[in-house]
Length: 242
Image (cartoon, rainbow, N blue to C red):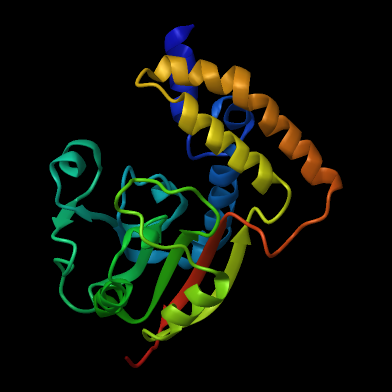
């Protein structure tokens, strides 16, 4: 029973569904992001670079010829991440125009030099290549001390276009009352988290699941609010003759 609960909690971390509703404290954020990425996944093809790849949670959504994960070179990342390459946080270890698509999920807020970072993405993308990125708008400080920024939809679009990309699609993920319930569960998670996965799963099941259910029900009857949301998801393209 205990092992099964831990396995359920682990499997539901990045995927929507009934299991996520029951045991995932970040159900609304992860479900909204998964659906947004799945909705544009057909645009990501060829040789794909995942910057800040972590465990590559969305890899299976893309019909890539090759899927390459890149992470900062730290002992922790080498131990826990599924990266294929590691770098110093400055220059990507790839030649110019070496990828058809670049993706990065919940990474940009951790970049202290966003202009140089976007220049590197532009450099390794072939002309006409596609960039897909998600960035939180409403979220608590996380992965401290390396949490540097939040971007509005206008600010994010502006900085991307300033670096040689044209935005083809921009979406606000979870722009309704579920935002309130997600922030409540995020607060509860922060003050109750332990170092024991089984305990965390039980806490989520009995303390946070009710708010997941209430949030889903409330979203059915209350109006949306496009100005209050969890994440920005942007699909952009590099100029074809760059």
